Image (cartoon, rainbow, N blue to C red):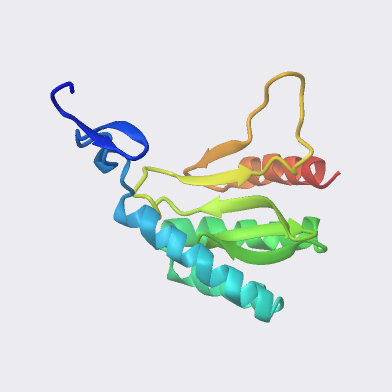
Length: 158
């Protein structure tokens, strides 16, 4: 048998760290997000109206720069597409319809990135040819950004 290989009932497997999953292990932030997603599923199944409260609570926990963006985004979603349901998704504010997430906001703090993110799922009707953006970096949320997001939101909901 080749060096570094061990026999198993499923055939030969590599015993290197990569094969044992160390190179693919999740960060603490990713593990926390997965725990949060499981908790959210339980809450949303037991009390669908809890989504709005959860979103506002998560926004309140954000650092000031992200909180200001998230609050304005929440207000914009409520004004532009009031029929969307607010809920958290992996611990971040999200909005959807029919149980599916349509758009979400991710604080820069969530995964220690240099900017917040606004993303749209594949349920958003943003198709534009063979390739189009679905995630946007947000460093600020002034009138220009607000107008662009409003346009995207209107298109997304169809």
